[in-house]
Amino acid sequence: NNNNNNNNNNNNNNNNNVDPKCLLTYLQSQQLGGGSLQNFLIPTHRLDQPCTGVLIFAKNGKAASRVQVAWAKRQVEKEYWVIVEGGNAGGGVDGLEVLRYQSKKSKEEGVFRLSALIQTTPPNGRNAGGKSSNAGGGGSVAVKPIPRNYNPKDESKTGNGRVCHIEWKHLLAMPTPSTQSSSRNDQRIPTRHLLSVKTDTGAKHQVRALLALAGETPIAGDLRYGNNRSGQGGGRVDGPLPDGSVALHARSVFMPTVSLGGMEFLKDEPFVADIPNKWMDFFGICEDDVKGLQD
Image 1 (cartoon, rainbow, N blue to C red):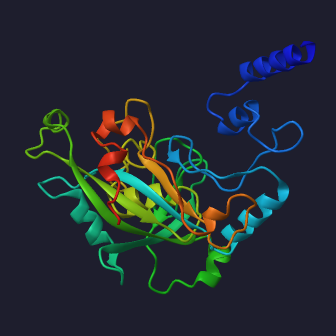
Image 2 (cartoon, one colour):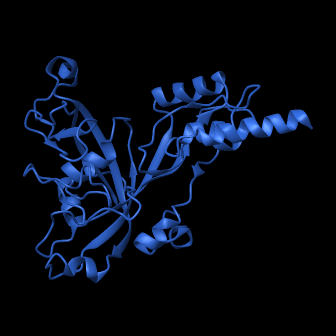
Image 3 (cartoon, rainbow, N blue to C red):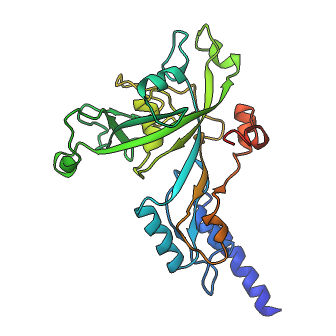
């Protein structure tokens, strides 16, 4: 009994020290990890703090190594679901049409490819001719068009950035409340769209930055990349979401080449995370509304 009481007291003390914004320390405090203390956890990839969805933690070093090798060899398939807004596509033009214009059609029906150079923004937020976010300061990235004579081998020498691609597919159109458009003196009701996005690279903020700055159709709530007031182009969001989140959801992760004890099902089908419950309040959709959209 004394041992149990001591353990409970230790757990309570640990819970009091947990950073509410740090998922890793929260999971450790709940003893959901590996090792003798059940707190050994290694993040095997990243997900921006204001976003939601699948995040894989390894409970031992061997599992972490296997997953990270698969990521390095691009043997992991990750899909994002995002809700984008019309941005600066005013004048009665749907923002989705702007995004299609900025993208190229893929061989797969209904799939489009958006590409650009992504470059880490210097501390002063300036860059050599690229579009960048002026919200959030350091830690943002800049987006530049890919030059016709661009040679990837010169990337490290020129500092031009990293070539990144996303492939996106339209899933659902969602009209926004008319109260939002009336405040902007707009003659139309802006439309939000649910997109499926896949990428074969892991550059920082690439989905958010490419959609907002290269595609001119930012993700709802993304003030970092969709609140561009510097005149450098890019789309504009209608405003922040009530909880400060960004409507980017890591929908699924599929690891067909990775063997993990007791989790063999991950080799046969992706692990899927339901969309956030708050999306019903923000956008009027729930998981039952979106199931089967890609079947």
